[in-house]
Amino acid sequence: DFLLDEIIEVCFTKKNGDERKMLCTLKSEHIPAYNAPILEDESGTVENKSYMNVFDVENNGWRSFLIDNVKYIKTNL
Image (cartoon, rainbow, N blue to C red):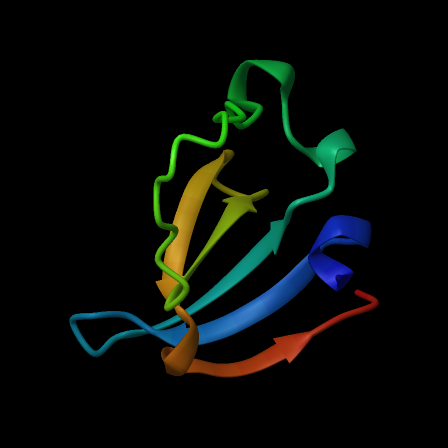
């Protein structure tokens, strides 16, 4: 998965119809320790597969977007 290996640019349409470009990743070295994800145990929680959760490196926080609303993804920035 390229999100685990690098920072990528994602362009998507927000719920309000605006277009948004975001530099994001899931690579741990780009996520500050205080912002690291909390790993849940296997409690039976169902993950919503229509959303992608990523770390926004420009705004230093977690963001999500609808996968169906992605216009393009740029890798190898």
